[in-house]
Amino acid sequence: MINVIIIEDEARAMEVISRLILQTSNEVNIVAKLTSVEESLGFFRNTSYEADIIFSDVQLNDGLSFEIFKQAGVKTPVIFTTCYDKFMLLAFENNGIDYILKPIEKADIEKAIWKYKNLKNHFENHGQQTSMTRLMSFVNGRSKSRILAKRGLDSILLRLEDIILFYTENKVVFVIDRFSKKYMLDKTLTELEEELDQQLFFRANRQYIINLNYVKGFKPFEKVKLLIDLNVPEINHSIIVSQETAQNFRRWIRDA
Image 1 (cartoon, rainbow, N blue to C red):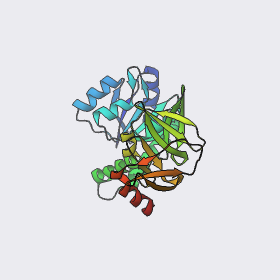
Image 2 (image 1 turned 60 degrees about the vertical axis):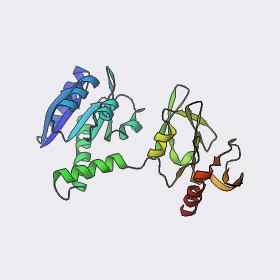
Image 3 (image 1 turned 90 degrees about the vertical axis):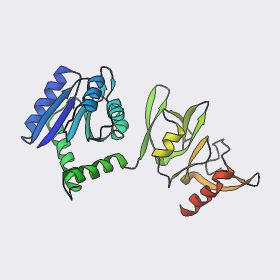
Image 4 (image 1 turned 30 degrees about the horizontal axis):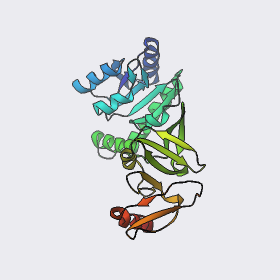
């Protein structure tokens, strides 16, 4: 039996998704229906629930559902539903294993549940608990290939391989891509440092994180520091690796 929780704030949408889930398979059991961030936080924090998968709308009346999974520490796989595709990257950063655009059809539910079963079976080696632990380690540990940035009012999905550097200025984090375009991020450099592939990105100093693929070389600076030479000349940034970090930088370049 697959135990399902649904998070949806629209009554009609709740009715539709519940009916489609139950029509999909007689193996599925809906154990809870939640309608807001506040109600969901209370449920996950105070209830001994047993759920295999969660279907959750992204935009609820009192906020984005991502806050539920962050604040309550929910580890259950999530299938997100929404009218907009702009939240896709965030969905896969918050336990997401699938992303369904509304209006939802039966085929969408069938595909999502099939995907869950397929992932679960892939990690099924030593029983339910072990397999689910492995599944969620896979879901939460996948390498990022894109990052969500902003330019004006637009949200832009950037490929990490196209990013030359991240830097902070006046407490705001910016991104520059290989086309010399500049974007803003809603993250700190410390948060980025924890998320990015450390074989590809290096924290040069408090202000910069650089992409290995755009490093042309380096030279000594003030005897004990290093000045990075990027192979994109129009990027007007002087990136200096501090004395404390220089050895790690040399090792990073050598092992690349």
